[in-house]
Image (tube, rainbow, N blue to C red; front, top):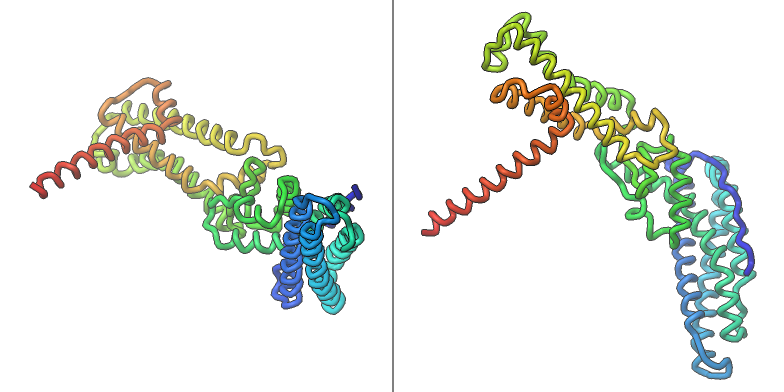
Length: 366
């Protein structure tokens, strides 16, 4: 089997393909057309391999001729589109600077496919063997076309997602790459160009979290999380001026105010540990994540984290109001598992609401 050419991609900013230029758009359109033809050729390879019987059998000859003629049609169309791509990179300096090397590689790989394809007079076994030998180069053509088309599409998808939304690479682009090996390579390539995208790449399950490209928006997420985390401590500041009775509906003495501050610290520590555990769990195995990436994870998860803090402060207040001091370890556990606590409460509420609605329907129907 002919060895496929494996040439390392030049690390060019894929975002450049998104520049407002009809040359770039035409290049991507031509590349997408070629990709479609490559998938058609892969279908022909599969059909040729399925042909069995004697080379002298007229039915076998007709079936084989049909598939080989299909390649001829694909070949002519691909040749035309690659010529168009070459003209584009030669006539537009910006397109040429970005894509000349990529187009040259695609052309070279395609020439290898044509050279290895079985001639029309081939016997079925020879045709099957030679067609299969072209598959690695066909796959490489598809991958190199993905280098041209996928980065721009990914940038567009991320731009339309809200912060924190998960985008599955396989769900969006899996049908553009025929094998798992090609999908893994493409994801690794995109991750190496992560600075060009408004996204946080996660190696596990090949997902990408949408993030904001605006630094102020990212900083705003950190501020919101800090405010939510320190919210109850504002009570103690305000207590200096108006007293906690106005805020909490309860008039604690000086010692109780100090105790409540201690409880808040314990709950906060538990919540921070919980957030750290969740971050470790969600990014476990992400060997390429830097400290900056992990900080960006906080931005991507801003609402769940802020709501977690708000939920735990509600749980702390309710526990303090009805139960008083439950012990330092219990306050820590409350901070760690406040979301589970509220899940249980909401579950009971949903059950009670369903029961009430059923009873009301019964009364109305009676």
